[in-house]
Image 1 (cartoon, rainbow, N blue to C red):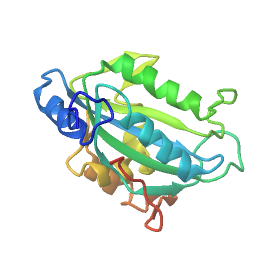
Image 2: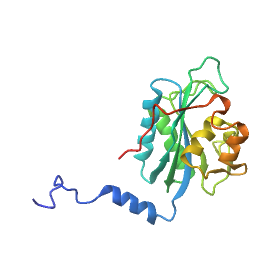
Image 3: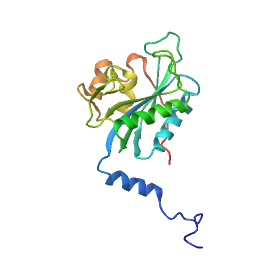
Image 4: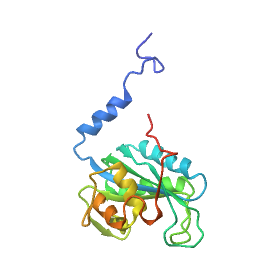
Length: 199
């Protein structure tokens, strides 16, 4: 078979190994942590779609995905459906603002509507931390405000990155313990469902 044939098997290159190689050779790559949340529609499918969309983003490689946690909505209008929450740990060469724009685009792709503050939503994509960056920009606060006070953020974060710290506040494990542990604030780990990393 002609090796120049574009449909020849096996492929002329191994995409996975190239991505892994890029992950180790790009000196500008940094660790970022993203929180995902959904309380409208098929919540699990939406979170999985967000993970897949992040994984498809050039300049980004997912390193860990937490278990799924369920919690009642915090703040906002009453009688909202419960949230599914998860945390994704990644390495990226995207600058923080580009990563924010990618997160917003993924939210939009899943029908996120921004009409009511803290209202129900199909998808929430928030940057919790970005390695080495502190920001007071109202459009991109880093670390994410109140993340150190919310068990629905800390519990999946600890699951995905046990050694994690919230800059200026301390270890995620200690912060969660101070709130009452993984079940604090009504958070429930859902071991019957899970998110997967794309192959």
